[in-house]
Image (cartoon, each protein chain N blue to C red):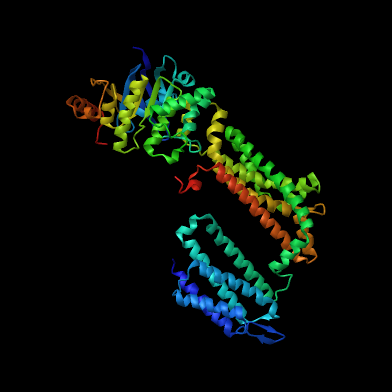
Length: 370
Length: 259
């Protein structure tokens, strides 16, 4: 229970009443009123009633239902007028505050945080609210398609072009990103082990790694195209260059985290270099290595997409974005953005889940499970 | 009796930015087979350094030392000692069983041999049943017992212990001390034990080496007349208190408070 709850509930109720009093929208300059709409009346009654009965401390389930109903109501109004009026924006505001109250209540409740499903509900509710506000804002405000398409338009575009999007995804993600990611991280890790072993390499190679990472992506990409051709290998090469350095730096730091006592212990067993590496130093470095893998999972996708701006075959996410922008085909650009956002999140999620499984022993992951 | 450790006019100097620090100077000491030797002294007296020299974790700068009749580095390569550190130093990604298995894996014991030795050494420290627990799921005392089991697993005759119970509270420490004595009686090992607790040193040892700092040196070697069988109550007997008194005198003689 926080002090914010009553304020949010109060604002939601005020905005709901306001949405009844002001015109919800205009059809051919004529105002459309909302007090004849049963659903709208019901929503306002629920919100105002809940605020009154619960003395502004609305339970989470009730604010959740009210927010959901409000969202459906907002979307249903969109088809019924040409231009939105102040009442519509107040209704959207009211629904936003309800959703906020719901999320606030769930995320501050210590019991709810522990349960997996409810823990997922907060980000889901937040994402859904943003989508509804986006849809309502763009369509209600008659925002031109070139500036910002509504989520429903983007979705329709995705559904209509799945074959093309899949081909692009295959070209950019499954070929360039994955190949470059695996090669870049592997090279970074192996070089880190070599650097760690030899003081000469530490002096000579680390500065060069630093230098490579400072090269601008837009400069490297065309050169890689010259070297490796138009197809995906040149993009994979860019990804290798981008992912190499974060892995190198993290792995070098990670290999040095094992404590002096643990190393003395291994020495007392007369353990050789390799068995110390595999039994102590690499496991101890795992949290650092996974850190680099997570950073690189997003870097790799950015690198591959941007690299495709500098010469590709006629397929690929970066290629599609650059040509669609040229044709003012903005909803296709957004469709590609949506695909890459989902792919990037899933990629990151897979790496993060693997991390949880591998470094289960690390205090940051076993927190509270001792 | 044969000497397990034999040090003759041993010295060790650490070069530092502020000039040389003499950690050990002219140390002469014999540790016989089967003895329980405690090293006691204030911090900086070189007791840990001496243990680390035996373990070949530190190189002496003068004098000679043999371990099992060989140089410390040969003794280390022959895996002739087990070392217990101030902290348990268990690997958090390995459960207790796997932690005890660590030296056995490095020394390439067979799978069946490993399982048998893990069982035996965990039983010696009363940790049977905790095989699958991870170190961070156990109390500090249990973790230190697991680290002792790990040092026992490959059955070296010499056990080097560097303030193993220093971080534990007194009740746990008393308990582990009496457990350690039982373990010593059962395994017949030679134990070198660093501590800065006088009762602990007197209670455990057959020989107490009193050391003092600047430079680190041995000021007194006390052969304990206490019987091998020692219940915790022995700490209230006059004999016990007399030895404790002598240790305290030795510590005072070697330590000046005016600096």
